[in-house]
Length: 255
Image (cartoon, rainbow, N blue to C red):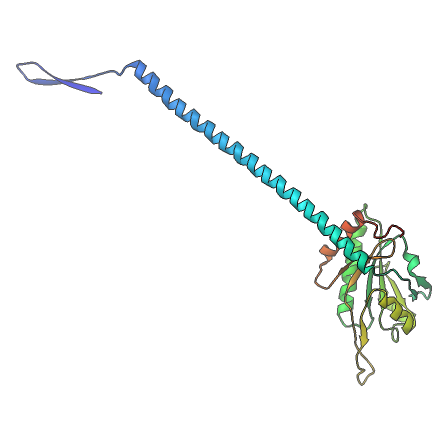
């Protein structure tokens, strides 16, 4: 800071001199500035801590609500399955080797079951390929027991033992194909509420069978657990089956 004074009467000369500020004033100004910065930092840390605590509390609350919702959905799903209770009956059909098979032959194993027919132009092959891919993916998981894929025809008129033997070779090597008389096939489908209706024959005697397009998941006690329509991807089905295997409840205490 400059302070100017008039000096020298004769020359009316103006001289300026630098005035030094008091060290005490500088000290207090610096201390005050540092105090403001420290206070701001403390407030910032406090806000951050409060935000983290509040956010953590919200996250924990959301996780708790989500877990409760999953448990509630699982209980509702279980009750629905008890009411439906598909697959409680038995079936007796011939496999692709001509051996008589019943549902009890698959007892103790998880089963992916599909109803279709060998003359199906595209949907059945697509669904069986998807089912085979799911089984292959689950086979790579050592924590999951082998899942048995099963194909039951809804067209016993054309799908005899020899036709099934040729057909199942195109899919998973463990795939079991099943056929029988018209009544045996109808009884097996009824147990899973499968719809099947043959259309009119063309000039070559060929026809299409309109039928339920679902992959059924059966538990080791032979009961229906879940189903997958055409919109479900291989990855979605694989994950669903894995979850069912790891968290499977008993539907009936006497099963």
